[in-house]
Amino acid sequence: MTTAITLNDYLIVSGLLFALGIAGIIIRRNALVIYMALEINLNAANLALVAFSKFNKLVDGQILAFFIIAIAAAEVAVGLAIIVALYRRKQTVSVDELTTMRL
Amino acid sequence: MNVHDILFYCFSIAMLVCGFLVIFSRNPVASALFLVLLFVFLAGLFVLLEAFFIAAIQVLVYAGAVMVLFLFVIMLLDIKASERRKFRALGVAGGIAVAAAFVWELKIILARPIKPLSVGSQELRGGLEQVVKPLFANYMLPFEVTALLLLVAMIGVVLLSRKELK
Image 1 (cartoon, rainbow over the protein chains, first blue to last red):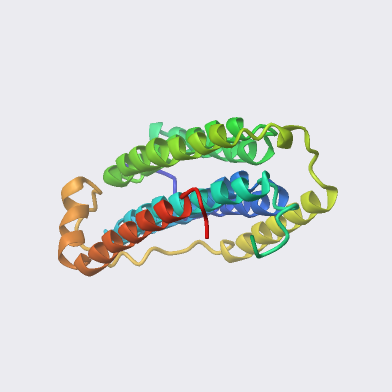
Image 2 (cartoon, one colour):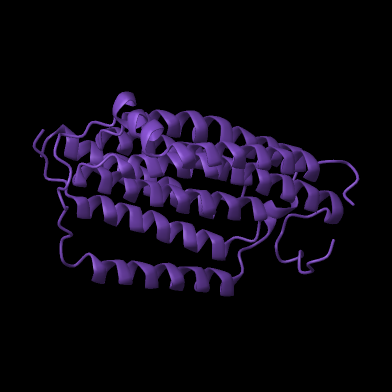
């Protein structure tokens, strides 16, 4: 299929999504929403990888994206367990109030 | 401008708007639901890139499993207090400054179009067979290590969510 969309267009979209993720991590104070912004960052990386994979005609980028999805699922499970444990101790998920390292 | 291009712009713009709403929604439940939409639009972009397997995995794992986990934890924690809290001016300014610096850097890097290497020979289609064959041939060891990592994560979650955290 002939198309005017180039690799650059996909990289621009991926970069903008990554910038949104970074902004979210810095702006938000709710630990859960910070986690969601981290997920946005991982997905921006996935988009760049799949775009490179398509335009270089190599399947390896897609396999790397597959691994990123698997690792991200594990990471979310552990992170949310940590947030639940923190909430049990401190009764808050705002990172402004979670200032000490020890429980 | 054919259907492919129009769909690319629709999915991209919708995805970025959803990302914006994830960050600036007061209510964490609204953030989570916009994140589900973002994942679905991203899966649409993967389909446009002919990465059908990754698109399916994206919907199944992210929009299905991960977001259910997120919503479950949000409901469990019952965080109503954070809804009314205002964004701090310093945080907003810092976040926008860092994001703007990143976009500026991106603009410099992408000023010259990046040429694809075109190293692969055959026409790539990211169907199940084309992705899974190298996964079980060249990437067998990382695949097994990922399985081990998922086991470790599972044990960690069970340990962390015990009642008495020693």
